[in-house]
Image (cartoon, rainbow, N blue to C red; front, side):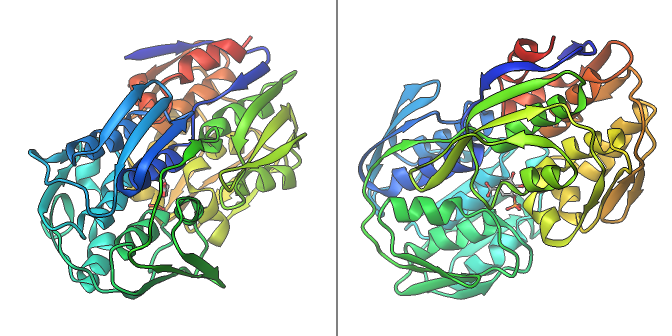
Length: 426
Ligand code: S3P
């Protein structure tokens, strides 16, 4: 599918956005192994979170609902059933990596696969700790999906994450729910903590102390009423669009502002972005607020180290913004970008060049000089949702109508993206 995007004269209005992808996955998985019923509102409409619902159904969990509201009839820690067919994780790294922690503890074998992009993404990062806990996991060529997970009784472990990854952390914590004793994950760089918050919310015994998260095995998890905050990583496309297009003023309501996700806002504020958060509240342990953004002239800057890990999903759209800043943007320590849905260092730089924007690809990052203008172009999502949306934002500032090839990819996290864009782009 192609989308044609005209330059915008301003981004204005007040919008709500769909539920957070990371939190939706976690609520669906934990609710499935809790006892009793959970009601989830503002569940992500993205295809990835539907892959998770599909897998949980295939494991015998009754799930009713539609759109953004779902009722999950939890089967308790030991209630999942052997699936009749292979589990389909679609495009979703979160589904395959996090669910594997639960599957590793089941008294049956599961096979889980994904689409072409997911089938190229590395799984050793979860296979290593799961093997230490006693599970046997087989993978194509020893490291890629499909996975065959031969579950069974698990031992508690202490595991230091070799790469900052909330998916791997969650996989180990989920497996730890089934281990007999205390399982700890040590994270040298803090990653998003939605699993810790959600597990506590459902009644798990979990403590966090200076980078060490410890979970007690065999807790009693009970069903809950849950409201998913809107996804800050989806909001990022609108935030950047409003910052870039002169005359913009945009308000986004009910956005998840968990400090482990909001590095983007701090970084933008440091560069001179006019962003306000007029109100804040806590729902199910997660911070939620309204964000008001006005067009701003930005300095540019350097993203490296822990900051890179903290805003890894926002780098494609930040790279677009970088070209419009005064001093440009340099991104370092972003090797993880090469193993996302696409190699995002290469797909971002490729698309920037299509618009006549200078950008240099480095081994683990990119350099984008500032004060550049976007020319109308034919962009390609390469099948990656965040690339489709990042370059739709670039197109808003171009000097003519642009085309986004493979625009349907946005549906992986944000099916409403194109309608919302039309709503605010004048
Ligand atoms: C996610 C963690 C991050 C992120 C992904 C979602 C999560 O991946 O890029 O979009 O929900 O835990 P890694 O765990 O690979 O860093």
